[in-house]
Image 1 (cartoon, rainbow over the protein chains, first blue to last red):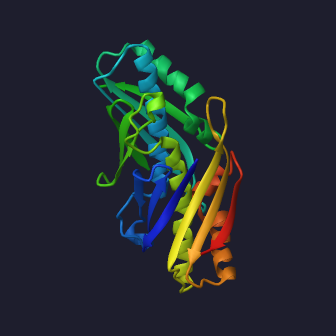
Image 2: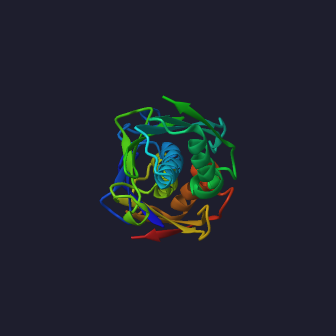
Length: 136
Length: 136
């Protein structure tokens, strides 16, 4: 897999991948010389983590012939204070509505977290990844 | 740090963070039930890695009173074949034009890779992160 980030001036970069129609703009906050015109690079790690496991769960529920009304995943991380600033723990909240049986949802999340989600598997090498389920 | 991904239907999710004006759409390829209408979650890891170190380098060069004409960073990764599919190595290419002295650029990259880039530091816990410099 390959991606490229191109400098736009200031602290802003546009990232594009194999499919150049899907790009992402990154920027830093004004406190470190940026203009706040894009996502922080490190925040993308949280989108990646939440998106990876969320896709797994939707895909597994689909195979179980189940579809939620609404589904979202929150990812939070704690960060170290010393350079290099790294994430020291991750927590995922799976928020769902629409009558999905609890044991089916738990099974889908378990399969994602133990078998399918490569991002969770990578991140577990340096920090714990915990989770909880919330029915909305 | 916190982020949330919201299901759009199919395999598509929109990620938003603390600053909700900056969002990113993720989707899967048709082969796994997606519609290819967004970035793959795992590709975001490469944007994050390249963007994090690229911002460091621009910031350090700025402190050295140096500014390139053009600057981009390519990130490539190799991926395992078994589930969970994880990245097993990363390679960064710093591509620059504009008369930046080689020793200054190398010093900026070294500072990023050894001291400032938290994404590189995290990823090194599970895979090697190598790099090269290309003058364009």
